[in-house]
Image 1 (cartoon, rainbow, N blue to C red):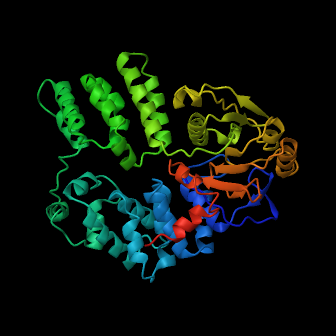
Image 2 (cartoon, rainbow, N blue to C red):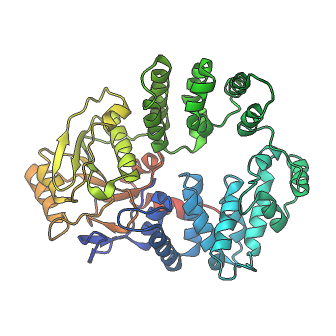
Image 3 (cartoon, rainbow, N blue to C red):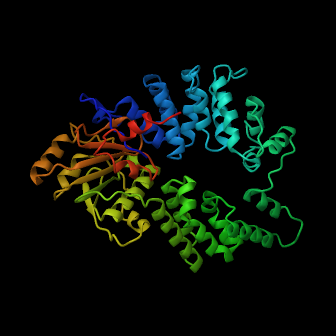
Length: 478
Protein backbone atom coordinates (compact mmCIF):
# COMPACT_ATOMS: atom_id res chain seq x y z
CA UNK A 1 0.00 0.00 0.00
CA UNK A 2 1.13 3.43 -0.32
CA UNK A 3 0.80 6.81 -1.96
CA UNK A 4 3.44 8.17 -4.06
CA UNK A 5 3.36 10.90 -6.56
CA UNK A 6 6.48 12.29 -8.03
CA UNK A 7 6.91 14.18 -11.28
CA UNK A 8 5.09 12.54 -14.18
CA UNK A 9 6.66 12.68 -17.61
CA UNK A 10 4.29 14.47 -19.98
CA UNK A 11 5.38 12.54 -23.07
CA UNK A 12 2.92 9.69 -23.71
CA UNK A 13 4.13 6.10 -23.88
CA UNK A 14 2.62 2.78 -24.93
CA UNK A 15 1.68 0.59 -21.96
CA UNK A 16 1.91 -3.20 -21.78
CA UNK A 17 -1.63 -3.55 -23.17
CA UNK A 18 -0.76 -1.44 -26.21
CA UNK A 19 -2.66 1.65 -25.09
CA UNK A 20 -1.58 5.25 -24.64
CA UNK A 21 -0.34 6.10 -21.17
CA UNK A 22 2.21 8.09 -19.17
CA UNK A 23 5.33 6.74 -17.55
CA UNK A 24 5.92 6.83 -13.82
CA UNK A 25 9.07 8.17 -12.24
CA UNK A 26 11.65 5.48 -11.52
CA UNK A 27 11.09 5.84 -7.76
CA UNK A 28 7.33 5.50 -8.12
CA UNK A 29 7.62 2.47 -10.38
CA UNK A 30 10.03 0.77 -7.99
CA UNK A 31 7.67 1.38 -5.09
CA UNK A 32 4.70 0.12 -7.10
CA UNK A 33 6.46 -3.17 -7.75
CA UNK A 34 7.58 -3.54 -4.14
CA UNK A 35 4.09 -2.94 -2.80
CA UNK A 36 2.13 -5.08 -5.28
CA UNK A 37 4.36 -7.97 -6.35
CA UNK A 38 4.17 -11.45 -4.86
CA UNK A 39 6.81 -12.58 -7.37
CA UNK A 40 4.30 -14.52 -9.42
CA UNK A 41 3.11 -14.39 -13.02
CA UNK A 42 0.49 -11.79 -13.92
CA UNK A 43 -1.62 -11.05 -16.98
CA UNK A 44 0.83 -8.77 -18.77
CA UNK A 45 4.15 -9.79 -17.24
CA UNK A 46 5.83 -12.97 -16.03
CA UNK A 47 7.55 -13.11 -12.65
CA UNK A 48 10.96 -13.26 -14.37
CA UNK A 49 10.15 -10.13 -16.39
CA UNK A 50 9.07 -8.37 -13.19
CA UNK A 51 12.37 -9.26 -11.54
CA UNK A 52 14.29 -8.09 -14.60
CA UNK A 53 12.47 -4.76 -14.40
CA UNK A 54 13.19 -4.54 -10.69
CA UNK A 55 16.91 -5.05 -11.31
CA UNK A 56 16.86 -2.33 -13.93
CA UNK A 57 15.14 0.11 -11.58
CA UNK A 58 17.64 -0.64 -8.81
CA UNK A 59 20.35 0.56 -11.18
CA UNK A 60 18.41 3.75 -11.94
CA UNK A 61 17.57 5.02 -8.45
CA UNK A 62 19.61 6.06 -5.44
CA UNK A 63 20.70 2.84 -3.65
CA UNK A 64 19.81 4.38 -0.29
CA UNK A 65 16.28 5.11 -1.49
CA UNK A 66 16.01 1.54 -2.82
CA UNK A 67 17.15 0.12 0.51
CA UNK A 68 14.72 2.26 2.50
CA UNK A 69 11.93 1.26 0.12
CA UNK A 70 12.67 -2.42 0.72
CA UNK A 71 12.48 -1.97 4.49
CA UNK A 72 9.25 -0.02 4.11
CA UNK A 73 7.69 -2.74 1.94
CA UNK A 74 8.70 -5.51 4.36
CA UNK A 75 8.08 -3.86 7.72
CA UNK A 76 5.11 -1.57 7.03
CA UNK A 77 3.33 -3.39 4.22
CA UNK A 78 4.10 -7.00 5.00
CA UNK A 79 5.57 -7.78 1.57
CA UNK A 80 7.94 -10.72 2.01
CA UNK A 81 9.25 -12.36 -1.16
CA UNK A 82 9.81 -9.17 -3.14
CA UNK A 83 11.71 -7.65 -0.20
CA UNK A 84 13.92 -10.76 -0.09
CA UNK A 85 14.72 -10.24 -3.77
CA UNK A 86 15.57 -6.59 -3.13
CA UNK A 87 17.83 -7.41 -0.19
CA UNK A 88 19.79 -9.84 -2.32
CA UNK A 89 19.92 -7.74 -5.48
CA UNK A 90 21.11 -4.70 -3.53
CA UNK A 91 24.13 -6.55 -2.13
CA UNK A 92 26.57 -5.43 -4.79
CA UNK A 93 25.10 -1.92 -4.98
CA UNK A 94 25.47 -1.02 -1.32
CA UNK A 95 28.70 -2.82 -0.50
CA UNK A 96 30.98 -0.49 1.42
CA UNK A 97 28.22 1.90 2.50
CA UNK A 98 28.38 2.66 6.21
CA UNK A 99 24.63 2.05 6.53
CA UNK A 100 24.57 -1.31 4.68
CA UNK A 101 24.93 -3.36 7.86
CA UNK A 102 21.95 -1.60 9.43
CA UNK A 103 19.91 -2.24 6.27
CA UNK A 104 20.44 -6.00 6.57
CA UNK A 105 19.50 -5.81 10.23
CA UNK A 106 16.26 -3.88 9.67
CA UNK A 107 15.05 -5.88 6.66
CA UNK A 108 14.67 -8.88 8.98
CA UNK A 109 11.20 -9.09 10.49
CA UNK A 110 11.19 -12.86 10.99
CA UNK A 111 14.19 -15.14 11.28
CA UNK A 112 13.26 -16.99 8.11
CA UNK A 113 13.71 -13.73 6.20
CA UNK A 114 17.42 -14.50 6.51
CA UNK A 115 17.14 -17.99 5.05
CA UNK A 116 14.99 -16.72 2.18
CA UNK A 117 17.41 -13.92 1.31
CA UNK A 118 20.43 -16.23 1.44
CA UNK A 119 18.65 -18.89 -0.63
CA UNK A 120 17.82 -16.34 -3.33
CA UNK A 121 21.38 -15.00 -3.19
CA UNK A 122 22.84 -18.49 -3.62
CA UNK A 123 20.59 -19.37 -6.54
CA UNK A 124 21.25 -16.12 -8.37
CA UNK A 125 24.97 -15.73 -7.72
CA UNK A 126 27.25 -16.07 -10.70
CA UNK A 127 29.54 -18.38 -8.76
CA UNK A 128 27.16 -20.72 -6.98
CA UNK A 129 29.92 -22.99 -5.76
CA UNK A 130 31.79 -20.27 -3.88
CA UNK A 131 29.46 -17.32 -3.39
CA UNK A 132 30.97 -14.38 -1.57
CA UNK A 133 28.57 -12.97 0.98
CA UNK A 134 29.01 -9.25 1.70
CA UNK A 135 30.34 -8.46 5.15
CA UNK A 136 27.47 -5.99 5.60
CA UNK A 137 24.95 -8.78 5.12
CA UNK A 138 26.73 -11.05 7.59
CA UNK A 139 27.09 -8.32 10.19
CA UNK A 140 23.50 -7.14 9.79
CA UNK A 141 22.11 -10.65 10.14
CA UNK A 142 24.30 -11.30 13.18
CA UNK A 143 22.97 -8.15 14.79
CA UNK A 144 19.36 -9.10 14.01
CA UNK A 145 19.69 -12.29 16.07
CA UNK A 146 19.75 -10.11 19.19
CA UNK A 147 15.98 -9.58 18.80
CA UNK A 148 15.04 -13.25 18.86
CA UNK A 149 14.68 -15.79 21.64
CA UNK A 150 15.12 -19.53 21.74
CA UNK A 151 11.45 -19.89 20.85
CA UNK A 152 11.97 -18.11 17.53
CA UNK A 153 15.17 -20.00 16.78
CA UNK A 154 13.40 -23.33 17.27
CA UNK A 155 10.35 -22.21 15.30
CA UNK A 156 12.31 -21.08 12.25
CA UNK A 157 15.20 -23.57 12.24
CA UNK A 158 14.04 -24.75 8.83
CA UNK A 159 14.75 -28.47 8.90
CA UNK A 160 14.46 -29.93 5.42
CA UNK A 161 15.01 -26.59 3.68
CA UNK A 162 17.78 -25.85 1.19
CA UNK A 163 19.08 -23.19 3.56
CA UNK A 164 18.55 -23.88 7.25
CA UNK A 165 18.88 -21.46 10.14
CA UNK A 166 21.99 -23.30 11.35
CA UNK A 167 23.58 -22.44 8.00
CA UNK A 168 22.95 -18.77 8.70
CA UNK A 169 24.41 -19.10 12.20
CA UNK A 170 27.54 -20.76 10.83
CA UNK A 171 27.81 -18.01 8.22
CA UNK A 172 27.32 -14.92 10.37
CA UNK A 173 28.38 -16.11 13.87
CA UNK A 174 25.92 -14.11 16.00
CA UNK A 175 26.95 -13.23 19.51
CA UNK A 176 24.65 -15.14 21.91
CA UNK A 177 22.68 -13.23 24.49
CA UNK A 178 20.76 -14.27 27.59
CA UNK A 179 17.60 -15.00 25.62
CA UNK A 180 19.05 -17.16 22.87
CA UNK A 181 22.47 -18.56 23.89
CA UNK A 182 21.18 -21.97 24.91
CA UNK A 183 19.09 -22.35 21.75
CA UNK A 184 21.94 -21.25 19.48
CA UNK A 185 24.27 -23.75 21.09
CA UNK A 186 21.74 -26.57 20.69
CA UNK A 187 21.04 -25.54 17.10
CA UNK A 188 24.72 -25.83 16.20
CA UNK A 189 24.99 -29.20 17.95
CA UNK A 190 21.88 -30.47 16.19
CA UNK A 191 20.01 -31.11 19.42
CA UNK A 192 17.54 -28.21 19.37
CA UNK A 193 13.95 -29.44 19.56
CA UNK A 194 10.95 -27.44 18.43
CA UNK A 195 8.63 -28.23 21.32
CA UNK A 196 6.90 -24.95 22.21
CA UNK A 197 5.17 -23.91 18.99
CA UNK A 198 1.60 -24.76 18.05
CA UNK A 199 2.89 -26.84 15.14
CA UNK A 200 5.09 -28.96 17.37
CA UNK A 201 2.41 -29.47 20.01
CA UNK A 202 -0.10 -30.69 17.45
CA UNK A 203 2.54 -32.91 15.88
CA UNK A 204 3.29 -34.46 19.25
CA UNK A 205 -0.41 -35.09 19.82
CA UNK A 206 -0.70 -36.75 16.41
CA UNK A 207 2.23 -39.05 17.16
CA UNK A 208 0.90 -40.09 20.53
CA UNK A 209 0.49 -43.80 21.23
CA UNK A 210 -2.62 -43.07 23.23
CA UNK A 211 -5.89 -44.14 21.67
CA UNK A 212 -7.72 -40.82 21.86
CA UNK A 213 -5.53 -38.71 19.59
CA UNK A 214 -8.46 -36.47 18.66
CA UNK A 215 -8.93 -35.55 22.31
CA UNK A 216 -5.24 -34.75 22.66
CA UNK A 217 -5.42 -32.41 19.67
CA UNK A 218 -8.53 -30.82 21.11
CA UNK A 219 -6.65 -30.22 24.36
CA UNK A 220 -3.77 -28.62 22.46
CA UNK A 221 -6.11 -26.24 20.65
CA UNK A 222 -7.82 -25.41 23.95
CA UNK A 223 -4.50 -24.53 25.58
CA UNK A 224 -3.35 -22.47 22.60
CA UNK A 225 -6.59 -20.54 22.23
CA UNK A 226 -7.29 -19.92 25.91
CA UNK A 227 -3.71 -18.74 26.54
CA UNK A 228 -3.47 -16.92 23.17
CA UNK A 229 -0.18 -18.68 22.53
CA UNK A 230 -1.11 -19.07 18.89
CA UNK A 231 -0.19 -16.35 16.43
CA UNK A 232 -2.93 -14.45 14.67
CA UNK A 233 -2.16 -15.65 11.15
CA UNK A 234 -1.89 -19.22 12.44
CA UNK A 235 -5.36 -18.93 13.96
CA UNK A 236 -6.74 -17.57 10.69
CA UNK A 237 -5.14 -20.38 8.67
CA UNK A 238 -6.31 -23.13 11.03
CA UNK A 239 -9.99 -22.33 11.33
CA UNK A 240 -10.98 -25.57 9.61
CA UNK A 241 -8.75 -27.66 11.88
CA UNK A 242 -10.14 -26.00 14.99
CA UNK A 243 -13.69 -26.54 13.77
CA UNK A 244 -12.97 -30.23 13.22
CA UNK A 245 -10.77 -30.96 16.22
CA UNK A 246 -11.97 -28.51 18.88
CA UNK A 247 -15.49 -27.27 18.03
CA UNK A 248 -16.01 -26.32 21.67
CA UNK A 249 -13.31 -23.64 21.23
CA UNK A 250 -15.11 -21.59 18.59
CA UNK A 251 -15.86 -18.75 21.01
CA UNK A 252 -12.19 -18.51 22.00
CA UNK A 253 -11.22 -18.61 18.33
CA UNK A 254 -13.62 -15.78 17.49
CA UNK A 255 -12.28 -13.73 20.39
CA UNK A 256 -8.78 -14.05 18.93
CA UNK A 257 -9.94 -13.30 15.39
CA UNK A 258 -11.51 -10.04 16.55
CA UNK A 259 -8.75 -9.04 18.99
CA UNK A 260 -7.71 -5.59 17.80
CA UNK A 261 -4.22 -5.70 19.31
CA UNK A 262 -3.48 -9.06 17.71
CA UNK A 263 -4.86 -7.92 14.36
CA UNK A 264 -2.80 -4.74 14.32
CA UNK A 265 0.45 -6.51 15.22
CA UNK A 266 -0.07 -9.45 12.85
CA UNK A 267 0.80 -7.80 9.49
CA UNK A 268 -2.02 -9.84 7.95
CA UNK A 269 -2.98 -8.19 4.67
CA UNK A 270 -6.72 -7.48 4.30
CA UNK A 271 -7.26 -9.82 1.36
CA UNK A 272 -6.24 -12.76 3.60
CA UNK A 273 -9.52 -12.30 5.47
CA UNK A 274 -11.39 -12.61 2.21
CA UNK A 275 -9.52 -15.81 1.36
CA UNK A 276 -10.35 -17.30 4.76
CA UNK A 277 -13.98 -16.16 4.48
CA UNK A 278 -14.35 -17.92 1.13
CA UNK A 279 -12.89 -21.17 2.44
CA UNK A 280 -15.14 -21.24 5.48
CA UNK A 281 -18.19 -20.48 3.36
CA UNK A 282 -17.60 -23.78 1.57
CA UNK A 283 -18.26 -25.67 4.82
CA UNK A 284 -21.99 -25.12 4.56
CA UNK A 285 -24.35 -23.58 7.09
CA UNK A 286 -24.15 -24.19 10.80
CA UNK A 287 -24.23 -22.07 13.91
CA UNK A 288 -20.47 -22.43 14.35
CA UNK A 289 -19.68 -21.58 10.72
CA UNK A 290 -21.92 -18.53 10.79
CA UNK A 291 -20.28 -17.32 13.99
CA UNK A 292 -16.84 -17.61 12.42
CA UNK A 293 -17.92 -15.84 9.24
CA UNK A 294 -19.18 -12.92 11.32
CA UNK A 295 -15.89 -12.85 13.22
CA UNK A 296 -13.82 -12.80 10.02
CA UNK A 297 -15.91 -10.00 8.57
CA UNK A 298 -15.59 -8.03 11.81
CA UNK A 299 -11.83 -8.67 11.82
CA UNK A 300 -11.54 -7.22 8.33
CA UNK A 301 -13.41 -4.14 9.52
CA UNK A 302 -11.10 -3.79 12.53
CA UNK A 303 -8.00 -4.18 10.34
CA UNK A 304 -9.14 -1.32 8.09
CA UNK A 305 -10.64 1.07 10.61
CA UNK A 306 -8.24 3.80 9.45
CA UNK A 307 -10.18 4.49 6.24
CA UNK A 308 -10.17 8.25 5.57
CA UNK A 309 -13.42 10.18 5.33
CA UNK A 310 -13.16 11.76 1.91
CA UNK A 311 -14.71 15.21 1.72
CA UNK A 312 -17.84 15.72 -0.35
CA UNK A 313 -19.17 13.11 -2.78
CA UNK A 314 -16.97 10.20 -3.82
CA UNK A 315 -17.06 7.72 -6.70
CA UNK A 316 -15.26 4.39 -6.29
CA UNK A 317 -14.43 2.70 -9.60
CA UNK A 318 -13.28 -0.93 -9.88
CA UNK A 319 -11.62 -2.34 -12.98
CA UNK A 320 -13.30 -5.70 -13.78
CA UNK A 321 -11.51 -6.33 -17.09
CA UNK A 322 -9.82 -9.59 -18.01
CA UNK A 323 -6.34 -8.52 -16.92
CA UNK A 324 -7.59 -8.04 -13.36
CA UNK A 325 -8.48 -11.72 -12.92
CA UNK A 326 -7.19 -13.46 -9.81
CA UNK A 327 -5.58 -11.66 -6.90
CA UNK A 328 -5.94 -8.11 -8.35
CA UNK A 329 -9.70 -8.65 -8.59
CA UNK A 330 -9.86 -10.01 -5.06
CA UNK A 331 -7.86 -7.15 -3.58
CA UNK A 332 -9.52 -4.35 -5.53
CA UNK A 333 -13.01 -5.59 -4.65
CA UNK A 334 -12.07 -5.78 -0.96
CA UNK A 335 -10.65 -2.25 -0.82
CA UNK A 336 -13.46 -0.93 -3.02
CA UNK A 337 -16.09 -2.31 -0.67
CA UNK A 338 -14.23 -0.95 2.37
CA UNK A 339 -14.20 2.54 0.86
CA UNK A 340 -17.84 2.26 -0.20
CA UNK A 341 -19.05 1.20 3.23
CA UNK A 342 -16.99 3.74 5.16
CA UNK A 343 -17.82 6.71 2.91
CA UNK A 344 -21.25 5.74 1.49
CA UNK A 345 -19.78 6.29 -1.99
CA UNK A 346 -21.25 5.76 -5.39
CA UNK A 347 -19.68 2.66 -6.92
CA UNK A 348 -18.96 1.89 -10.56
CA UNK A 349 -17.30 -1.05 -12.32
CA UNK A 350 -15.79 -0.88 -15.78
CA UNK A 351 -14.20 -2.98 -18.50
CA UNK A 352 -15.13 -2.15 -22.10
CA UNK A 353 -18.00 -0.10 -20.67
CA UNK A 354 -18.80 1.34 -17.26
CA UNK A 355 -21.88 0.85 -15.11
CA UNK A 356 -23.06 1.94 -11.66
CA UNK A 357 -23.45 -0.75 -8.98
CA UNK A 358 -26.29 -0.77 -6.48
CA UNK A 359 -25.35 -1.89 -2.98
CA UNK A 360 -26.58 -1.49 0.59
CA UNK A 361 -24.03 0.42 2.73
CA UNK A 362 -25.47 -1.32 5.80
CA UNK A 363 -24.36 -4.68 4.44
CA UNK A 364 -21.11 -6.29 5.54
CA UNK A 365 -17.91 -5.64 3.63
CA UNK A 366 -17.98 -9.20 2.29
CA UNK A 367 -21.54 -8.82 1.04
CA UNK A 368 -20.77 -5.55 -0.71
CA UNK A 369 -17.69 -7.14 -2.28
CA UNK A 370 -19.85 -9.81 -3.85
CA UNK A 371 -21.81 -7.09 -5.68
CA UNK A 372 -18.91 -6.67 -8.10
CA UNK A 373 -18.82 -8.96 -11.13
CA UNK A 374 -15.49 -9.67 -12.82
CA UNK A 375 -16.60 -10.88 -16.21
CA UNK A 376 -13.50 -9.93 -18.23
CA UNK A 377 -13.37 -7.78 -21.32
CA UNK A 378 -11.34 -4.79 -22.46
CA UNK A 379 -10.14 -1.83 -20.40
CA UNK A 380 -11.75 1.49 -21.33
CA UNK A 381 -10.96 4.33 -18.94
CA UNK A 382 -12.91 6.75 -21.17
CA UNK A 383 -16.13 4.96 -20.22
CA UNK A 384 -15.77 5.98 -16.56
CA UNK A 385 -16.20 9.67 -17.37
CA UNK A 386 -18.71 9.06 -20.12
CA UNK A 387 -20.94 7.16 -17.67
CA UNK A 388 -20.47 9.41 -14.61
CA UNK A 389 -23.70 11.39 -14.26
CA UNK A 390 -23.06 13.79 -11.40
CA UNK A 391 -20.46 15.98 -9.77
CA UNK A 392 -17.86 14.24 -7.61
CA UNK A 393 -15.27 15.73 -5.29
CA UNK A 394 -13.12 12.57 -5.29
CA UNK A 395 -12.80 9.60 -7.63
CA UNK A 396 -10.92 6.47 -6.56
CA UNK A 397 -10.02 4.08 -9.38
CA UNK A 398 -8.70 0.61 -8.53
CA UNK A 399 -7.04 -0.85 -11.63
CA UNK A 400 -3.89 -2.31 -13.16
CA UNK A 401 -3.84 0.95 -15.18
CA UNK A 402 -3.55 -0.87 -18.52
CA UNK A 403 -6.19 1.02 -20.49
CA UNK A 404 -6.08 0.39 -24.23
CA UNK A 405 -9.49 1.10 -25.76
CA UNK A 406 -9.51 4.46 -27.54
CA UNK A 407 -6.79 6.18 -29.51
CA UNK A 408 -5.68 8.39 -26.65
CA UNK A 409 -5.50 8.35 -22.86
CA UNK A 410 -8.73 9.39 -21.07
CA UNK A 411 -7.70 13.00 -20.46
CA UNK A 412 -10.15 14.39 -23.02
CA UNK A 413 -13.05 12.39 -21.59
CA UNK A 414 -12.05 13.46 -18.08
CA UNK A 415 -11.91 17.13 -19.08
CA UNK A 416 -15.28 16.88 -20.80
CA UNK A 417 -16.78 15.37 -17.64
CA UNK A 418 -15.35 18.20 -15.52
CA UNK A 419 -16.77 20.79 -17.91
CA UNK A 420 -20.22 19.18 -18.04
CA UNK A 421 -20.59 19.01 -14.26
CA UNK A 422 -18.55 22.08 -13.30
CA UNK A 423 -16.22 20.14 -11.03
CA UNK A 424 -12.53 19.40 -10.57
CA UNK A 425 -12.30 16.19 -8.52
CA UNK A 426 -9.25 14.68 -6.90
CA UNK A 427 -8.46 11.32 -8.53
CA UNK A 428 -6.77 8.54 -6.58
CA UNK A 429 -5.37 6.07 -9.10
CA UNK A 430 -4.78 2.87 -7.12
CA UNK A 431 -2.29 0.70 -8.99
CA UNK A 432 -3.00 -3.02 -8.56
CA UNK A 433 -0.01 -4.48 -10.44
CA UNK A 434 2.95 -2.09 -10.64
CA UNK A 435 3.30 -2.24 -14.42
CA UNK A 436 4.95 1.18 -14.51
CA UNK A 437 2.45 3.36 -16.33
CA UNK A 438 -0.34 5.80 -15.51
CA UNK A 439 -3.48 6.92 -17.33
CA UNK A 440 -3.57 10.47 -15.96
CA UNK A 441 -0.96 13.25 -15.97
CA UNK A 442 -3.11 15.88 -14.20
CA UNK A 443 -1.78 17.60 -11.09
CA UNK A 444 -4.81 16.63 -8.95
CA UNK A 445 -4.30 12.93 -9.68
CA UNK A 446 -2.55 10.92 -6.96
CA UNK A 447 -0.99 7.56 -7.68
CA UNK A 448 -1.25 5.04 -4.85
CA UNK A 449 -0.27 1.39 -4.68
CA UNK A 450 -0.12 -1.55 -2.30
CA UNK A 451 -2.24 -4.12 -0.53
CA UNK A 452 -1.91 -3.08 3.11
CA UNK A 453 -4.51 -1.11 5.04
CA UNK A 454 -1.74 1.45 5.63
CA UNK A 455 -2.49 2.92 2.21
CA UNK A 456 -5.41 4.66 3.89
CA UNK A 457 -3.05 6.52 6.22
CA UNK A 458 -1.22 7.88 3.21
CA UNK A 459 -4.38 8.86 1.35
CA UNK A 460 -5.25 11.20 4.18
CA UNK A 461 -2.15 13.35 3.67
CA UNK A 462 -1.89 13.46 -0.12
CA UNK A 463 -3.54 16.83 -0.58
CA UNK A 464 -0.97 18.45 1.70
CA UNK A 465 2.01 16.52 0.35
CA UNK A 466 1.70 14.96 -3.09
CA UNK A 467 4.88 13.00 -2.48
CA UNK A 468 3.89 11.62 0.91
CA UNK A 469 5.16 8.14 0.14
CA UNK A 470 8.45 9.12 -1.40
CA UNK A 471 9.12 11.73 1.29
CA UNK A 472 8.23 9.33 4.09
CA UNK A 473 10.73 6.82 2.74
CA UNK A 474 13.45 9.41 2.18
CA UNK A 475 13.12 10.58 5.78
CA UNK A 476 13.42 7.04 7.12
CA UNK A 477 16.58 6.39 9.07
CA UNK A 478 18.65 3.27 8.46
